[in-house]
Length: 449
Image (cartoon, rainbow, N blue to C red; front, side, top):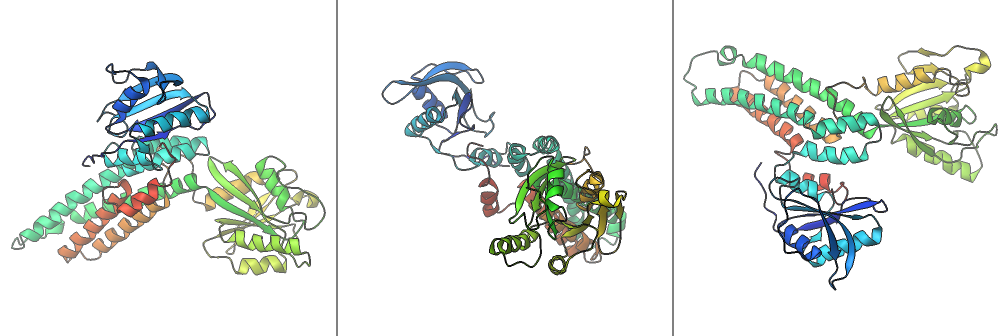
C-alpha cells in the first residue's frame, strides 16, 4: 500500500484517566518540535530512548514531570513521527498537557485516527486495525487470544493467500483471452477447474471460521420468555451465578426487562429476562410485557420457559410471530419437583431441555445446546475474531466463485467473476475499500487509538 503523507499533527490522551500513569500520544511532522517546546529543550532526542523531563506550560511553569519517547518515521506505529508523553494519570494533568500540545500546533485526533494513519501508511491492514479495537473491547480470555491472533496477521494471511491464488488463476484465464487462436482445451490443460474448486473449498473454510469469530466477538443475545412464575428469573440468576433478578412466588414480580452478560466457553452471552407473558390489567406490567416483545426482535436465541404444564396462549402468540432466524429452545423447569432427570429431547419444531434452575440440574446441557445452535465449535488454532462485514465479503466471494464455475464455457465471464471475487476479498483487508466504509470503521474506535 502506498504511504499517505499527512501534513497535520494529531494529539490525544491515549489512556483512561484516573490511573497512576497516563499517556499523551502525538503523530505527525510537528511531533518532535512540539516535544522540544513542551520540555524547553533544544537537545537531540535519541529514538526509542526514555527521557525523564519536566513538561512546561506557556508561562514556563511546570505542569508535570514524566517520560518522553520518540519514534521517528517510518519505523513507528503510524509510519509518521510519533511522540509519547508519560505523565501522572490525573484527568486535569493530562488535559493540561494535551491543551499545551494543541497550542503548539497539533490538532485533536479523531476517533481511531492513529490506527487509521497506520492503515493508510501501510503499517497494518484493515483486519489488523479492527483487531486493535476488538482487543480493547474483548470480554473473555478467548476473545483476547483471538484478537491478538488477528492483530498478528492470522486472518490477513489467509485472505492474502486466497487473493494471490485468485490473481494467478486470473492471469492464466486472461492470458488465454489474448491468444484466442490457440486451439487447446485451456481449462483442462492448466488445471483451472481444479484450482477453482480448491479456492471454493478454502473460502468455505475461512467463512466457517469467520462465522465463529463473529459469535465470539459479538456474543449471542438470549431472551427468556414464558408465563409468570415458570422460573425465568431463577434461570437468569443460575446462569449468572448471582442474584441478579428478584425471585418470589408472586406472579408478575418481574415487570421490566433485566439484562445480564455471562460467558459460556469463552463466548459472551447477553441474557435478557422479560416480564411474564399473561393477560393483566396492571399498567406497569403491561408496559413490561410490551418491552418483552421488543426484546425478542433483537434476540439470536429464545428460551421458552415452562414448568411442565405447557406453553400459555400469550407466549404462544409471541412465538407464532418470531422471525425464522431466531433459534428456539424450550426449557422445561422445576424437574426437581417432579423427580425427573435432566435431558434433551429433539423434534422438528424445537429442542427441549429439562432442567432445574433451583438445583442446577441440566444447566450444562442447556449451555452446550446454546453454543451448538450458535455454530460455536470451540477454540482452535484456525479461529480469529471477525465482523459481520467480513462474513458478508466472504459470502460475496463465495457466490462469485460459484458463478465462475457455472460459466466455464465463456472465459470472459469466467474471468470477470474471478475479478469480482478478488475485489470482495480485498475489501476485508482494505486493499479495495470505499472511503465511506473506512470512515464508518474507524469512527467506532477510541480516541487516542
